[in-house]
Amino acid sequence: MIRLHDYPPSGNCYKVRLLLAQLGIPYERVEWDTRAGETHTPEFLRINPAGKVPVLETEGGELLAESNAILSYLAEGTSLLPEGRFERAQVLRWMSFEGSIHQPSLAVARFLVKFVEMTDEYRAMLRQKQKEGYVALELMEGHLEGKDFFVGDCYSIADIALYAYTHVAHEGGFDLRPFPAIRGWLERLSAQPKYVPMAEG
Image (cartoon, rainbow, N blue to C red; front, side, top):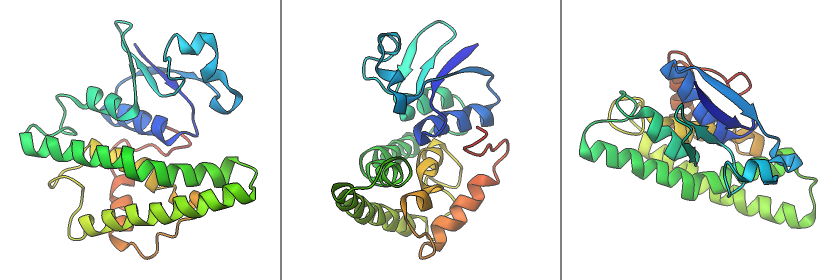
């Protein structure tokens, strides 16, 4: 059985749990409390020297870090990773957008609101992250107008990657009311077969 090194509140870990559930893949969860520094212990650093979760441990003992790399690995050969060359590149495009623009704003804003004792410095950082996050949301909204999913007509790991932190955007102080296309997309994703909520995934 594969093993997932996990931290339940993490959106990056949730991406992997959601995909595993939807693919019906059994796995063992090993939880590490990142806020308590457990991912920087010698024990964990042997698993991932970067000190971050998630990490997927395959049945053969291979270790794979970075949530979007894990999604790609697990989705290979399924309908969640398109076969067409251009469509696969579009999946990579949106996963890259998630990692470089979307997550650094929405995820950091959520972390500041939920887990940090606010100071003037953190308030200034939060305002900047929210400003950047709304830019990301506007780009997503424009792309989703008239579309059900991010790539082609099918649900894919690009959707999963972007869903994780978008569906909890309110926890970072974002208002999704001005984004009807995103709200409709979130509803479609939560209605997918074998969907599991973040708290249960």
